[in-house]
Amino acid sequence: MTRSSTSAPRAEGPARPVEAVIFDWGGTITPWHTVDLVEQWRVFARGAGTIACSLNDLAAALIRAEDGAWARGRADGTSARLVDILLGAGLQPGAADTEAGLAAYRDFWEPHTLTHPAIPYLWEGLRDKGIRIGVLSNTIWDRDYHSSIFERDGVLELIDGAVYSSETPWVKPRAEIFREAAAGLGVDPSVCVYVGDRSYEDVHGPQSAGMRAIWIPHSDIPESQQVSHQATPDAVAHELSDIADILAAWSLGAPTPQRNRHVEG
Image (tube, rainbow, N blue to C red; front, side, top):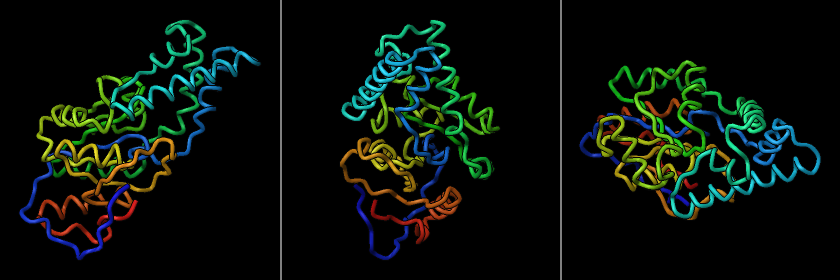
């Protein structure tokens, strides 16, 4: 849970520079979508050419493998990769039927990977102010796949550095992965701001690494994916366009804009 703040807005004190803003991907860079996580693997199984009971058995095995991977991440902060999910379900990576299943799986996900239309304008505006743009995502997908999505949407060249949990030993909220994201941008965590839609991963996590955190509380996070904790965001962005106003206030040592102060989550 998050703690609410009901006192009058306070000045931030001496201006604290913001040299980099690092963004979560799903539900932040992309608009939040409720995705049928069972159907994704049924689509994979159909694409792989399985039918009838075999289709249901394969989909169930993939669901168990993925659920187990994410459960381990929430419990001990360890990462997983798509190949781990496939192997856990008894599939052979690179086999023709596996590759056909992956093609169907990616077609299923494509509508849910679209970059929010406000992102290019936000990132261009921040870069014009000399602020570096980073991406840090908990993901089982590899860098090439994410890069192809950003290239498709015309924003790849606006990203100064990206860290994907599939390439590291950790997932958010482990402090190590936030420090790695800052190092990839060539800055200290203290001058970074992290933006995300999940309180545990995207507020508690970056703050534990010494970053400030802006929470976007518009995603309907499934209860099974929530972790009980206490974290107070440094600010709340109800729209992506709010982020520029928050950063401008912080750079001047001014109060966080009233609309963007802490809320109960």
